[in-house]
Every structure is written in structure tokens, then in C-alpha cells.
Length: 504
Image 1 (cartoon, rainbow, N blue to C red):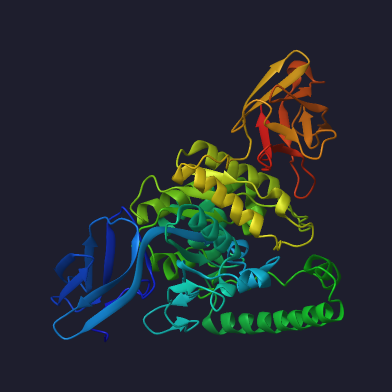
Image 2 (cartoon, rainbow, N blue to C red; image 1 turned 45 degrees about the vertical axis):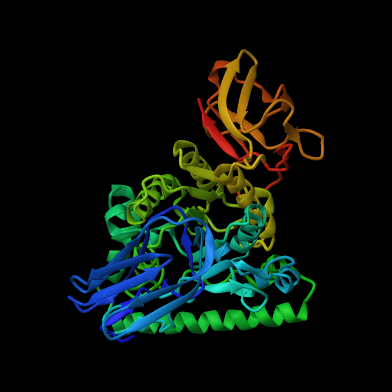
């Protein structure tokens, strides 16, 4: 191939195409070039137009491996070892990016990770690109086959998810990792959606533009170098302390050496700029048909927690438009427990926003990871439980397996004299429990929305009954409304109930 004819980077050997969907094979070409494609008994021909070509393949059943031939008059390209199965995007920030090799039990898992029908594509983390430069200058991505030589750098959550789905369905599974640590949800959105809400526009888009308005390239480079120097000093300090204290957790180490210097300086080429990674990463895959998106993000937006519900709704609408599926399922991983000591970081509000988005959107669902967090580690290492919880929900939701894959989610609230009665979805009689017995914890009530008192709560007939000390003046009921803490309301399936806030 040459620059006159290319195939989009995500279309490589070992890829997985989404079964039962029209697949789009596409690329760039000088206008007028005729492109031919031969795959699984389908022969297609198209002429490039305005520098692009696209070929649409009729839906196919799960299977493989197969070989695809794409050619022009002068060039022929063979794409080998293709599977037809189910494809999922693993999207968000650092906790979905978190690699298998760094996770709890990761080394042992890597040794036995020989799954030829699980494939992984990691979207290159391009921070900035234009006609003159690409930062960083990375190689194009490549679909890889899951085995001990490749799996160590897979998303740990995506790996455990894919492993569970494949082993229980025998369907080939493809994962597209489209994620980057420390990123705001605004990084992953089209400007059209980010500026739709005036308050969101002011906080994310206008604030960014005010920073870069008079910022020269020389000043941006200077700031970046200064930050890099500070970051490298911190990393050296962290590595030395970790080496000297090998039995300490990362959370405990950071209590001693401090948090990672954050955020990096913003600028026109900064990867944290709004709408940046939407253009440099997500748009590289938005022609690829997928079954669902696994979305794990929100930590970076806890400082603007009151905006997160609408931000997430806008992102989902944005991605569904681009992926040409108005009902594309989003599986939202709710933020875990974490003791954030920075001011105005409200994890409870973001969790509630994630819950409300899932409750209000028929094609979305939520996975609760509260109890998988670590008090002083924003990157908890237990990713297996999270990945398997996502898989359990998906097995019930998409594959009609007789498993109870959903956490208890509050359904409605009734106030009756001196009692508050809360009912839940996803639980049947005797399926709501107090984990490890004892008293039900984490419920608080308020009559003014400012002062909250701990509430006496118990489970009766699969409902939570709370003593109401405020009568008709009751205004708010909360459960697990804190950055970090203990929870013990569970389903018999071992899944925790979601934290929530109900305003009366």
C-alpha cells in the first residue's frame, strides 16, 4: 500500500467484526480509484469519492477465522485471521485503562491467558495531530490475540469481562480499548455537544479558550517542560520510596510522598483539552460496529460533579450518533469508594449522576464497584471483581443467561407516618440482605437538605424500612452518600446496592 490507497488503521489481521450487523470496511484513496473486496462469499466493488472509500458487508454469523482480500488495480492487501463475534468498546480514563499486569493477581492470570478467540485493539493514544505533526508519533494500532505474550497490557477490567463472556457463550470477543488516564469526559466529546448546555460550555469550553487566548507556542512548551521536570522528580521519589517499602500498598506510599502532580498544564496540544481525544482517538474507530460501550470514567470530573449527569447524557447521545446506533447500550461502571482529600471533589454526586443516567435510559445499565475501591488509592487494584460484574450483567442482559447480574437499585419511596419505605428493582423476596449480618449502615435523612442524621434502617419483606423522625418535614433520604466508607446493603447474588439520594 501507499499514500494513494490506505485501509483504516483499526482494520488489521486478527480483528473481530460485529456479528449480525452491517460491517463497514473503509479507508482513504485518491478519488476515482476502484476498490474491490472479497470476504466470506461477499464480493464488493466501490469507487473512491472525495478521498474516501467505504464498503458495506451484509450481516454475518459468529465464526472464523477468515481471510479478507482488499485490492485496487495496482495493490492487493490480505487481512488474515478475522473472527466474527461480539465487539465492545472499553472507554474512559485510568481505571479502565489500568493494565492486567498491574492488577491484583495479574501475574498469575497472565500465565494462563491463552484465549485465541479473544482479541484486543488498543487505540493509539495520540494527544494531538494536524497535517504537520502527530504527538506522540506512535505506530498504528494492531489487533492482538489474547495470550501470555500480549495480555499483560490489556485493560484488566476488559480482560476479565471478555474472558467471562467468551467462556460462557463460546462467541469470539473483541475489545477496543479507547481510554486515557486522567481525562475529563469533555475530552471525549464533539464540540457541538459540549457547548450545547450554557453552564457546561462556560466551565469546560470557555475556560479552556480563555487560557489559550494569549498563550504562545513558546510559553506552552515552557510550561510543559517545567511540569515534566516536576513530574519526573516526583516519579523518582515515588519509585525510591516504593523500593524501600516493598510491603506497603500504593495508597499508603502516596500518603507519605504525596499525590501525583496534577493536572498538567493546558494548551492547544494538551491531551486534556476539551474535545481533543474525541478527534485523535474516538473518531479513529467510529466506523466500527460494536455491541456495546463499557464506560468507566468520572474521577476527573468530581470537581464539577453537578454537571456530570448532563455531560454523560450528552456523551452517550454524541457517541450513538457517531456509531450510528440510537440504542447503543452503555454499561456504566459507577465510581468506587475513595477518600479524595482535595477540595470540592464530590464522588457521591457523580455516582448518583451515573445511576440516574442508567435509570433514565432504557439502553443503559450500571455496575456498582463501590466496595472495590481503596481508601487512599485512586487506582484500586481489584479489577477482577469489576470486570466479572460487568460480564455478569451483560450475560443476563444480552445473552439471556439465567443469572442475576444486576445490583439492587432503588425503585420508589413511600413515607407512611413514622416510617420511610424504600423498594428496589432487581431483587425478589428474601433477596435483599445485610452483608455479614449486623445492623444496616449508611442511611441518613434530613429535613432541610443541610443537616443530616444517621437513620435507623432494617430490611423487611425485601424493602428497607427507615424510622422517620421528621414526619412530613422529611426532605432527603441518602444511602452511602460519601466519598469513602462502608456499605452492607446487598443482593443475595453478592452485588452491592447502589448509593443514592432521594429528594421528596
